[in-house]
Amino acid sequence: MERQSASSSSSPLDAGQERVMAAAKHIVKSLAVSKNAADDMMHFLSTFDPRLHPLSSPEAGHEASDSGPDDAPGRGGEEEEEIAAAEEVIRRCNSSSSSSELIGMMDYLYAVDDAIAAAGHSARAAAAVHAAMPRLEEEVRSLLSSSLRRLSLSSDDVDEATPSASPRHGTLSPDATASVRCVADRMLRAGYGPELAQVYVSVRRDALAESVALLGVEAVAIEEVIRMEWNVLDQKMRRWSHAVRAVVRTFLAGERLLCDEVFESDKELGHECFADVARGCVLQLLGFADAVAVSARATEKLYRTVGMYEALTDVQPELEALFSGDGAREFFAGEVSSTVEQLGSTLRHTIEEFGHAIHGEASRKAVHGGEIHPMTRYVLNYCGLLADSHGTLDVVLGDAGLDDADEASTNGGATSTPSARCIRELLTLLLHKINDKSRLYDDAGLQNIFLMNNLYYVVQKVRESPPLRELLGDDWLRRHRGQIRQYETAYLRASWMAVLSTHLRRGDDGAASRPAAGHRAPQGASAKGFNAAFQELYRAQTAWKVTDPQLREELRIAVSERLIPAYRAFLGQGSRHPARHVKCSLEDLENYMLDFFEGVPKFVRW
Image (cartoon, rainbow, N blue to C red; front, side, top):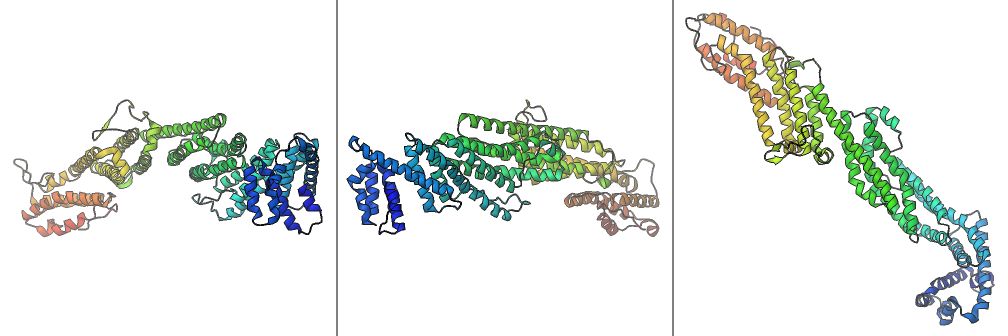
């Protein structure tokens, strides 16, 4: 045969030229199925070396094509020479411990081609093919594993504390992919698809596992998740939400492309291999989400659980589309849908339990100074998170709001959504509970300060959050701002009516009030009474805390608008002993008012 003689005969051409000739002749034979393609190729090659011109002649084409009956005896002997040459190349390369260079591997693949072509009617050729397969398996393993080595080197650049930094997945370069496909094609043509699939799945499954591990996601048993400390679980849930997007859109998408290229000549086997490569990774991700779903439904987990639900539903269509074949697609679609439903159910029950927790909050310790109750801050933060994810909650809650799902409430003329009904109900529960807790204060004025503080905080948070404001509506805001004014009026009446009416002869609005018939209290007695009453109010209400600066200033102004005119009128009535009985000037009184509601008790020293 030409390839054997070219490598063994003593020709004036050097060895490198002989190898080019052998490769060219092999191309001619490979292209023999298309006479025109073979002639075109050899005509092109002959422009570089005239010696290649005879190969493109009709005689050469005829020689490379199927021989007629008259040529059969000669062709049989030539085929035996080709088989013997292929055997020799395969044997020599198999016994070599050193890795072959490109030309050596091409020779090996040409020899395998010759053996495969004759294997159907030659036991000797079939044996040669069988002997070549372990070497081809190792070549596939080596080429596929090169991506793992690159991945290992790149892992040093990944900060596990910041999952937003995505590591580079161990995908192959275009040259490596082409090389794998060359080898894979021979194995598939030789009927060694199962062996190829076993090697391919083993290596690529490891590559995928390493990539996912670099994202900070590892296999965790359900029991571990259930026992996990919250700060650890919080970090893992956060990383999972990032990882599931990266895995589907980068890692699995890349694996699917690689499978399609390597198994181009056997697409069905390629689809099976991709499913086998992806199965462990996908089930690991879904397993963690399932574990979170069945663990304790603590309210602090709500935000992270929403994030996981959104991440999984976001990539669900892309993930399902990666799998071909009814069996694989149905399996993975079922697994993903089951996990989505589990997370959705967990979200619904967590919100319901949060409502029950608000209703059942039974602490009997009053907040010092009537400040904002910690529960108010917590519930508003919670509602803010729900509002940010209102689209997801509308899907999850559906018609299962906390209030009557069949009764559509209106919000400024628009029908309420499930998320809006949910948040409205949670805030209603909160305000009812705050009203109950106001009774922990003995002073009616402080009760109303407490109610004002908390409702004002709620209203401000709703106003400052566009999602909350949109969900609750301006009607809701107007109604509750009006309630704040009612609390303010109730505070003024409870705290200042006695001082104004009894000691300054004014109503709770500061206007003059008429004393009872036949009664006229001495001026000195009224001054003393006012002094004592104001001292007590100053001591108490400087210790009361109005957290919001604007509300604090509004309250001071509301008190001053009633107290200062009344006290000015009181001073204008005159007194026989002003030095003895009138201890506070109008200016002093205005300055004292600046200390109210600061949360720091002070005393008047007269």
